[in-house]
Length: 117
Image 1 (tube, rainbow, N blue to C red):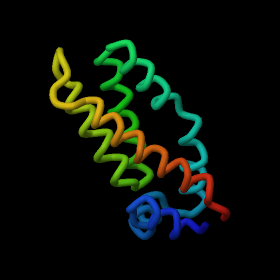
Image 2: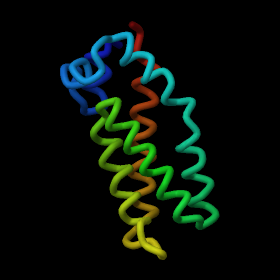
Image 3: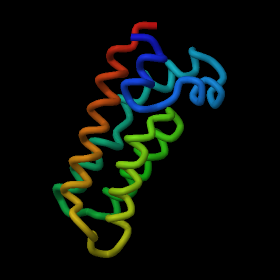
């Protein structure tokens, strides 16, 4: 899969990513580093333990990385979960928001694994 195909798969825009990051090499470096970040693992662990502030911080970090990579679905999901976790007690259906983030995260990881250039 090309970078253009990657951005189609994740609902992003290659032209925006290229303009933002400057080169395919920089895009690829960022995409290849993303799966090694610990934010998603920390998020899952914190959610299981009810450590809402840690979970919120991880969701914010995921949304920020998604913004940098120009992956709007993952960014929206991260921001929505972070917002729900921004109170002392979570608001709304945080499990549904976590699952939405998980779906977007898996989609981005699968697309990253498919990039060949």
